[in-house]
Image 1: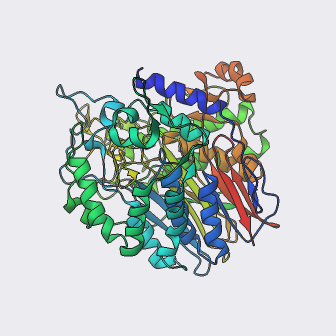
Image 2: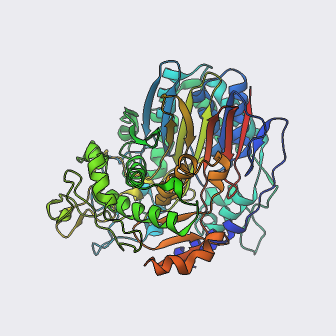
Image 3: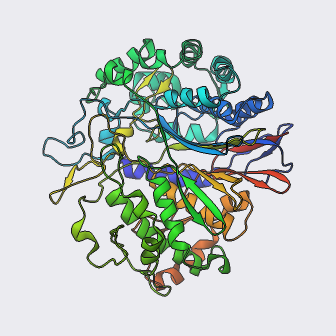
Length: 586
């Protein structure tokens, strides 16, 4: 079966999936509003991960402490989405210091990577799956270094304490959920590779391997060993010790197109603290991740364009509201594809892209009665958009990325907040497995073509460069500068649309966090308008087509997890399309 068909099968199954979770003795949500606002809360993509974070918060841990515990468990129970073999972005709000910082734990390309990395022998871009399950797709994992840096600055509990829940689960076992079972069955490569076949499948002589059944207890002693090493020795063992050696050996000896990742590449990795990008929207300040992620800039551009329209006067989910969000998205995604890359390698006009006059000029291109069709990128330094592309230094990105990511939001008892999105890129990343965890394929987030029509692509592969991402961890502050909400989602390049639509629901339409997350999804990435199947939006297809939109109805599986501060306390939300829950306490 071709990869595109497998994706369609996966998406169709996902929308039909219903997860029934047992209620614990804590306030929690799984597609429902938290019933008892509390002083601390975690909303994450799996009940065991949320529980690990909750336990840390209940023990007096900080939001960063809880984030570490959550991520270590997600590596185990949601290996298709994120893990310590990948990377992450984190926004952290320090309530006591009234300080916001963005932590960049994105993977980097090895020194041996070249701009032609994903071209075949004829100089043509490879298919996505042909590029993924290889050693060439693996970047230096960044999340462990990033989390350790954040813990040094904001941790309250000892580093090793944060590993206990994940180690216990890895040794004693966790339950295979419907979603994990489905994802194991989705991948054509997993049963072909000895490590994943042994871990995820049962085998009967003469028959094809069978994915582990729902409800199976799965242990991962190799991952427990890795965690104990990192807990005891810190990130050094991951980047210069025996775990680093295992990672490099796997990549350099991969069964398909070995990569050049070296011990020197591992040892050279450094997480980066950056300034968040922020934009005033209505009475709030919305802050996101700067490049190398495109998520913060693009979602803020969407909001900045919508600032010029009275969205609050429109019914959420109405034709008028969908049309405006769609057109703003087209314009922002057009800029994204042209301008955004790793700012250590290319000049991204961040301030100009968020300039109010520029965004107002983009908003004037929107006709309330007719779609503008495929949008062209603007010239951010010029409010008049005539001839916008003629002086551009870059060509549009040519990417084949697929969604497999996880997001969680956390607020601790002192009011500190974390919004963190982590990923291994494709489901199960590169499918290469060492030490009980999967290695990323994040290098496929680079443009497969380095040059288009004689112009370089901002997101082209280069040694030590960070590939452009769509991850959009977001923090929102009210007019007094106080923390208001944390939100984010998995979903590949659709993440930007999911997060933007949810923020409009929160700030323009006054929805609760759960109601904003529950909204039927509509996504336009400067192409067709995708409408979530089996929702009320399907009834609007003809009206949207009459405005000139090319409508595609399909399953859309966001995975939003958010927390909002209300006058009554914290209010959590978890996307019912996945398995997440929110847990709150005081």
